[in-house]
Image (cartoon, one colour):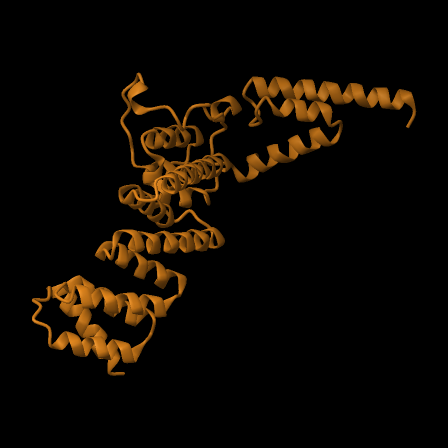
Length: 300
């Protein structure tokens, strides 16, 4: 290509970009003004891409309203800004509704308003938001979930150090157990990380029993955690200890039956049901219904 031909091509290109820029700034094009730079610095293809997108909007339409990039920028302190410092009074809407709103700018604003106080309350909704069609909603949800996960990890690291420095502090150990339980129950961990946390949880629960003696709540946590890990024999052994120590507790027997059902141990289920038949416990209607259901299954 000769220099003269190249010069003519560049002049035509610049003129086309200038015309497109006028259309964009006048509101006659659906492109944002940031697209001008793309067309300018990619001769030929930039204009073709712009026209292709323009035709797409024209023939298929777009349900989303264009949003300026500065409006999509996340504030630097959105995660740490306390509610008390906010100057304005805002009517909050449920986060579920905020995500379903089609207008990107309004959805972003409502999401921020809903999550100012405590994002961890909306983890289930944030997990759904990560699959939203809008890229900004997905980005914000993913970033918020990462922040929640990082906060849990930092708190657990601090508690782990405190527990090691204060090995005889049962209250501190109970606090550590509570945070690990909350982290596991928040449903943001992938399978590998979830298993790691459950294995750590089991170690801490064993340590709690060794140091503070057998506690019903701790033992039930240990049973549930072992079932989640698939350690059904350990769960059955702990449930036997639970029955021995709290034989008059209705919920203890229900938890024991649940272990038998989830482990699919029919013989153990029949054995426990036989024990229940001789117990002087005034069963609640809901638990009586559960026992009847499990009893029928044990006869199959």
